[in-house]
Length: 122
Image (cartoon, rainbow, N blue to C red; front, side, top):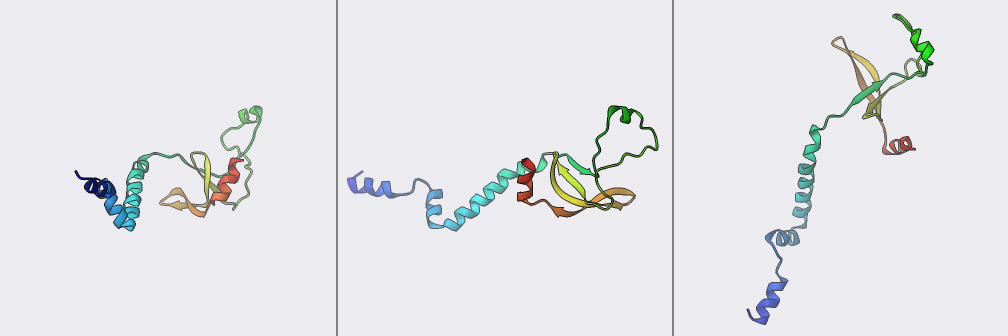
């Protein structure tokens, strides 16, 4: 190769992908976004534990041993307060109890904001 050919060769993109990225930056961003979505697809099959919490109570072991059928445990929430929806033991939403086809369910009424999630960590 002559010196001019070598210099000209050095200025050429190393691959067609680099050339396309230089000529079509929007295409590069779109392709990158599709790659991220494709890379995240494997997360869709990961099982998560979803818990709906009605309330909590603290008891002495002696009191727990005294419980029998028909006993009532007083919880720390008032009637009508939203239920807490936890995913892997982290609060993610609040909702209200519903009955669908004779089964209990929960209607989501509020999603926890990222700021509220950060507050939970402290």
